Image (tube, rainbow, N blue to C red; front, side, top):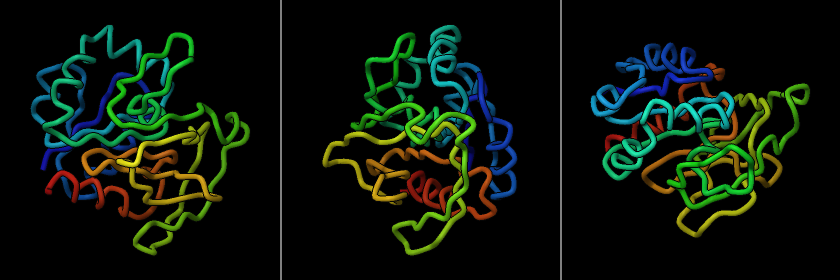
Length: 186
């Protein structure tokens, strides 16, 4: 299985490493041709405004929208913001792939970063790292909550795509990657 990692800005190298540890084949996505080679791909954490601009600069926005119904996408932190239908932030144009909205930096600024134990819908506890994490403010009925922190959704899915407030690449386990792999194989 080939899992791409958008490699324009952000924490893409850690996802690449984690995919290797997971036993799958990672691909850096920097252009259209690399995007079309993967079975699913990850939009990593980073700076959502920069990622938004880089999608346009590298002419990837429309290509992602063209494949969104054919391959599965996982958005992590800034990637979650990019998957959302969030509006009202200057210089940020999301992909609007999943029907939810977020507040950027909803858990605080960089100095407020933290680790927390989060219970997944499976009952498994995972270690979750929140860094300037987005907070889900609203979602459509099509969105399934897979994990919460203090009653706030932090891992959600629409059965095709996965969005995550925290950084699973820093967790010692593979639970979130396992779920993403299951989406790809379904």
